[in-house]
Length: 327
Length: 276
Image 1 (spheres, each protein chain N blue to C red):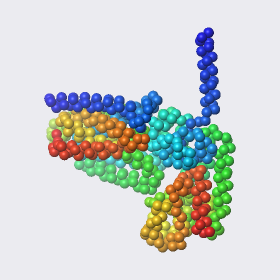
Image 2: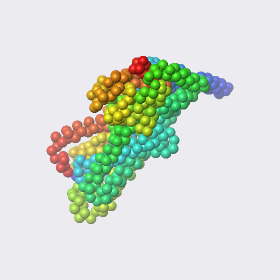
Image 3: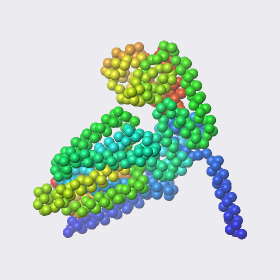
Image 4: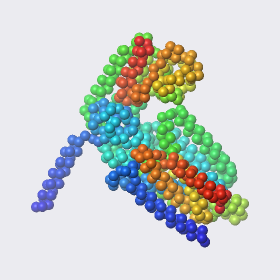
């Protein structure tokens, strides 16, 4: 019961932190020392950017929690199934083929850089599932994901080598940034977060059972094959939506579920929403710091999440020996 | 009576505002050096209210606020300036839709080819509502200057095969590039054929086989010329037919835009120095 109370406490804390950071974010522009900005800047740039940062982080936190449960591996992160490399390849191909058409008219403009990245991410997961011949075999899925990630990543590098003019855009994407997130991005990510959150929550029991081992899960009579497929696609959709809008944000998807499980030992029914909240808080905080650190220059937020997330995990690791095998 | 007076006053205010709006020069933000340069060469430098961090010519723009780069503009800062128009490269695939979604008028310009320069100038002139003849007149003047420069290239240099590197990592300007087209105007040509693309990455060995008559390199990379495998056998290296350009000369050479006359002047001088 005490774990339940701790979970409620953490939920409350993360909720309050989210609101505080959103409030603080309204005051912090692309420069800390700017005078009050006009309303239209606030509502058309700053608010959607703040919400998008929170939502993108929440999607990554949720996806990370699903991945770590599904693969029964504390090192699993949302990009494991190749979606990061797929998103990059989607964008790189669109840049090479459609080029300037992406801001003009026709197919390129309709697809947009976001659409290209989204399709690429989902395509990569589909490829991983095909190579692994379904979602039933954890190790096969992991290996196929690694292979897809490496091969698609190499193709991105090759395209950049041939066409260095796309490199600057690609580099910005790979570092991750919330600078261009607008209201449509916020709406789309909110819908995906609600749907994928609800789906994953419905299968929370399966994730708990998987933690005890695949045989245990099977012996409990849970609908394992169907659940795994649903969970993989939920993970893919959440990751793709985050990546397409804010680029490859490092570490949030890995660190958020870890921090939750380091703070409270609870079942997935709690761990999923808490990880999402934690992800949102992490990315929102990182985005705020990234905005003021080098102002008026912008620091891509992905650089900061990598540094801060890595540092925090190291500290956690040295403090809690049981972490890697943890509950 | 009072309401009648108010109505007249409002009407008057509206008329004053309309008259002011019609006469005010547009507020322009340029997020591409070539476009900043075009605006200024068309004599409309004073319409610029901000530029990107790479715009560094002419000197007048150095004092303007910098609002990030074309690919990563400071969206808040651009919007807060309330520009009438934002000039950008068509390759800024993430930032253009974002600025448009905010209701800003964004004019994108493709600037990669020689023959696109008159269109670039025309589009900028139209956007700024300049005199209809401003752009064609500027373009004709530029062409005359380049023809005059071509006439100063020594006979011995005509048809020379030029290898011009645009970065230390071995990316070179082909015949298909802006630079290649400028070389052709001066009566020489790039060793890299059309089929290889605009700025392909070139193997050092390929250069050995092509054996160009002239090497043009950035100052920074030119110093290690003989350290490149086999390059000491190149005729151009042995006979010191090498030109090195500084970063600011490189801007004029490589940026596709209205400063091409400056670039052509540098190249013509290089050809005169080597073959004169």
